[in-house]
Image 1 (cartoon, helix red, strand yellow):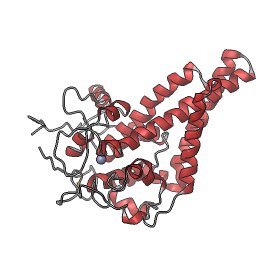
Image 2 (cartoon, helix red, strand yellow):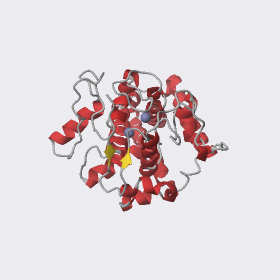
Image 3 (cartoon, helix red, strand yellow):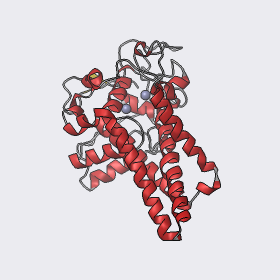
Image 4 (cartoon, helix red, strand yellow):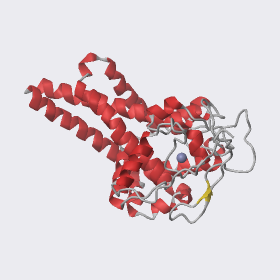
Length: 329
Ligand SMILES: [Zn+2]
Ligand SMILES: [Zn+2]
């Protein structure tokens, strides 16, 4: 069953067709890289920062950096920063307005989102709205029809000449940028500063806990380093690849409940590792729905949390999927 819905964001001045991106069927084989990325120009500061966090995460293979508290914090951080920040905050709330919540909570979720090294809320949302508008058509910023590697990470580290400055993507995120909070975050990589501050805080608290527990400078240093490697770097890398996998894997591997005009798929592995985001074909079919799992067994952790938020009055105007008698047809 094909689903096409035109969605008007809460305050957006223009309606955006988020599900299909156009009337024509996609080229089933290949697409060139988006025009605005050609000729390809690598953004070395992105390469440097992403390489650094991956290299630091590799220290997890060295026993000295391991601590059970670091491992527990990495798993907890995957939920707190990854799920609340990215899947619930950046994606279902800010991009698709699948529910509303008090401003203080919305801003808090956005701050959690910035602790994942995934750009400012406005730029993330703009890129993702462009993806929905043109998915697997030009100029989708990260279609695997260009290449799998491009869809996973290539698009992150290559310059997109129409996404360099806020003014260029402002039309996709007018609703967000009316709020001075998001506007300020666009200035001078403020979002990256927030990422650094949260990382330093985690390391410092690790040092204090290590000092209190061991009573030695070496004990403090060891736990600070362990938390830096596990609770910051390993968790950041895991969440990064989870988000990137939604752009790459779930447009290539998996099954389809809906005949959307893109190549989106439902992928259980991505759904498990990214708190329900892997039910991506369902999501492309009904982008505004806050629930991405549409069959009873398509477990969607983020949706369960949004339901709990609704139950306690923190989430309102929750958009539910349209009832589907038989999604196979
Ligand atoms: Zn997609
Ligand atoms: Zn989306």
